[in-house]
Image 1 (cartoon, helix red, strand yellow):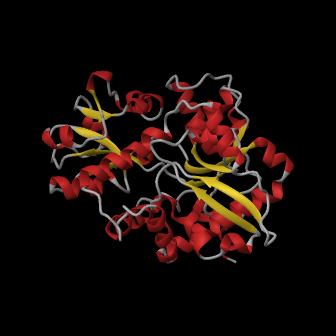
Image 2: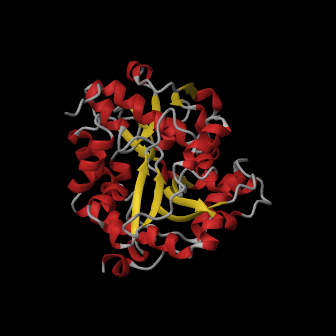
Length: 354
């Protein structure tokens, strides 16, 4: 039986996902070694290649295509036995898990991929499932608020992680100031109490929880539509795996993409596995999240409409890198092209739907 969390719990849990996604938890080498040792077997008795995929948070609709590929046998059709390791508040960062060998692939995001290159971390992005980062700014219904620019000077609750992701870009583009910032502690109460304020969130989750708890439909600004060009829900792996076993990488990418096409058409198989891994996930939350992924073009927009889910381009990565340089998030000498490869994507919609 599923146990539905209260709206405040839902906001806390889902916001924590972003905190983990954009931060690094310190862990001991012994834990990494223990995780790695559990993932040494490379094939199963059935002859399938064993693969472990790490997600950035507890199972939810934003992970649906990967669960769908397990539930419908797509991974098996590609010769893969895939295990999903959920993220969460006590789980090490994706980079640590990947570099420590605890997972073969991880759900990453563009800003971190470029920062990893600056730190000489040998990982690489091989696909971008989300063409738009679901990160948004949420405000109260107010006739004076028509666009993101109208929030200049208003109190905005943001996490510390925003300082190294979207906040510098908002400051540069819309004249926001640090004086506007209020500490976002993953609790909507301050936002709900102050009708002049705004807060960060995910397009697929926080607006739903706020509507349930606050009794009103908030105004939502998807940052991707306001100059924040980051890819999200990427597939990243070690550069060593790309070099030594590109066939495995290709099969995992292709099967994952097909899983997402399947999930968008009929999410029920994937949802059953999501609820099995995360008993607190409700049908109501899933029913809210999936249409939002479609409505805002999170997965199928831009290059992905022609090149297929997972699409990436050099121009888009350069746009992200330039925005990071212009706002001081990256040094101009960093070779951003080392953060990704187009080798495994951009096959075209017909290829993935065949």
